[in-house]
Image (cartoon, helix red, strand yellow):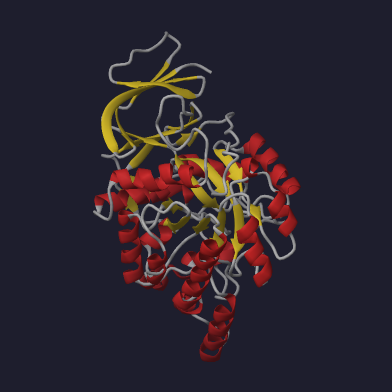
Length: 446
């Protein structure tokens, strides 16, 4: 691996923005200073003058569909979409086929990623009503965390036995990440919708069926359990203003995530996009969207992520009860976040904190998520003066569609560097490169 010098850019890191050069050697950042000169004639030099240099994003929630659902996506294709979007590390969810409910299945996914992923990778171990002992004995250094579906969603991994749920929160050896929706409330709302519309339920009913009550009831239970059992809890994809009152800025034991589609779309978007933006939990009101943006700014939301969940366009074109929930997001997540900074929702430094630093801290990631000497060189170079026109982009997700088609974002990703190697540049992923398995601290419960 040859040395790499990134020169002339504005480094945005740990609340500061400074003109600095970065020297990368053996995959790690060796030196951060102004005016660094190339180490040799073989040193690769990237002129980042006028550009932003950010830590690579850590996306703590993606669904790459492998194994079992690879007609929608796979680790190879979706990791390329990730680096095209500035994501250098992903944590992948367990609701595949078969679901990742034991360490043997998790290690098989890691073996596929070691062969195929261009980004760094880690995987969640799924919890169920039947695998408590597997959860208790899991090696915390080898998993992103424990994923608990407290509401039913894609994959049928609902944990709804109260005693089991309590024990998962009591004994989980790593952070617990929850999908929070109250299934009995959703079932009741589905029946009401069918009484009103029959089987021709409009997609605008989705946030009524997957209601704010369903979200708040489940999230409140998760936070109550975490407090009672002294667990580390990360509530995924918060969608309502009411849920935000459950979280406090600076609390890194009980934290919350917001996803980019809930920052961008709101309930009027169903009229145009319909099934394409059907997701669980549902996109809700403009007021909820505004409240989530404010919570990103003030720290009640700790993490920005995607919940990238591709399905084929044919699948998404079904009726309300046929069309699966989820949409492809990872390729344009960073441009969308940066668009939010231009609109004044929050600062560039906040994006870096929520999408890079906070996931590293909350999940105890070793030597990633920050631009620091000695850390792995996971970097994104962004042109703030060039637009990303989604319709002009080659889409790397296997599903080959985007909910952002017809949209332009005001920043452009010039290059993505993964563990010291250029993984994406010239609007193309580089072939023949693979990411690394993420390392976690072994002391992760408290």
